[in-house]
Image 1 (cartoon, one colour):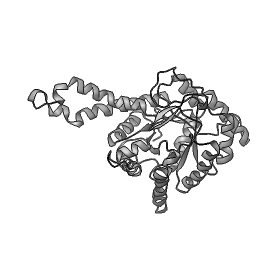
Image 2: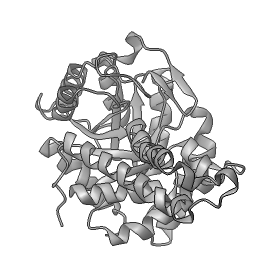
Image 3: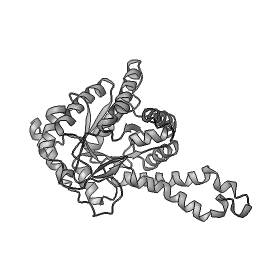
Image 4: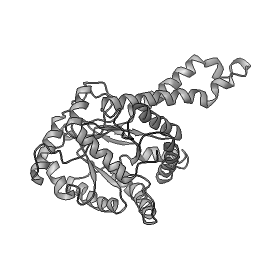
Length: 343
């Protein structure tokens, strides 16, 4: 199927919230990881989201070029072509963008999409994330208002972050402390600034102890009840039913989360969960296994010629693709999106 249109994407997210399931959002950095992610969604019978971080965009542009916008556009163009051969909807998203990279990543991409939409086409990316976790809340929401207006004009969904995610991702690092938990007051401030959809469709990454990177289950204390309190506070501010879940929530830093924590978060309105660390490992682990098992074939040892069939990148690349795809299937199952695609 083609990449999801803005209307299809909005319907995906609305169905997820109403149906108490969520989509894995898989970080991609190359054509091969794009294919692996889409394959995984197809095998799970789930629509899905693939996303490019600032670092992923830099890498995809060429490791000596390091142009975030070029790399992001290249990955989007590749995804547009290969997604046509798979029977699920795939949305394109850009991941964490801090304030100092807005002018060299998100704003140029929004502008490029606006030009394409003006000419009668579709946006390049269906959603973008503004990561304002490192600035004061007032400034965070002020920038979010400006970006939301620009996104609405280009038929794009905005993702914001209200609170702080611990750990490290693409050079952005935060300590693990009480700042990792969003408050009901944060939720109220958000709906006062951005409304409930009338100013533009947006997703909200409220934090409840989330940490980026690698950690074992139980080492980080997630409090999904924080999300419930935030939804109820937003509902009260908007004058709607307490259980209406006004926010389309996003779960960051999900690696190592316990199944019951994921399930509770989804029940409280999470529609998108970022998955990166686990799929990186799932992609790399089969390659390491291949190299160790075929050591004398992939290396020209003691003057021999090696085994071309074993060092051909397609050989071990297929193993990497299969490993990552299987982890995407697992993520869909954990988030209850498996089998929810409506053909």
